[in-house]
Image (cartoon, rainbow, N blue to C red; front, side):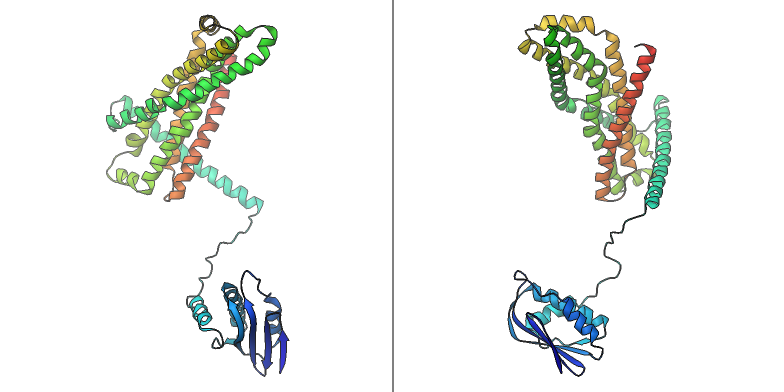
Length: 378
């Protein structure tokens, strides 16, 4: 007979049977003894075939004791050691029986294994190829739907188009008003810091007018619509994918591109130029507020300076940019929605990807258009 002692237990061996005696309180908050020394002793004892428990000296216990027992019984099963629970408290016996009643399914635990660099590069390449193929197919179907529209054969409801126009136009006026006015105020403040050093405060009107007409009006409107309308398009179409509504349209012989995408594309293309003009006006008005309240420039002087410094062509360039941005935002939002998976998380990813894709396309397109205008002398 040999024995091994721990701080709260004692392990005694009698031929082929081991008896584990508990003592004191076994509370999780007070700390549970390390099970490794006990497991090492059991593994080193080759002739041990049975394990019994003695809880006569056991005090209070909670889940800490159960954690200890579960680990111990799992280790005993791996080494073909029979465990007898009759010596445990009745509550511990029931909990241990409940824990072992249903075996754990193998392979269900998530394994966080790092992938090699080449594997990740390959996965990204495959995903990019799949996205590129899907994008080409989507653009082809959209172009065909636009051709059907010009030929009068596109099948969509006028009420849907009017509803999308309301959502992309009048409903966005509040946020466009706030952001555009603040952008105009910021441009005026930035210009005032330097121009007032030279007594050239009147040229703040030139700065705000040109900035809003050529760049900031169309850019800020497009970014707002990407986060507001583009994400909504992706979420709406993604939800239809989850509910199999798009599959139902295909089953009935109705093109989802014509019925769902085309009204959204037309609505945003029609509303973006108007919203851009409104954003230009509100931005210039914001600069006028700063000029009149801080720099002693009257509204009439500010208006005259803007009129002389900002020809109509600058507003036309901004409107053209806004129209192109509207096409990009609507295309990105609808494409990500049509590409959405069949789960709730996929809808969230689609909305996020729509916003990111839209903003990237807006910035790239703005840079290209600016370079083209510079080359052409506009």
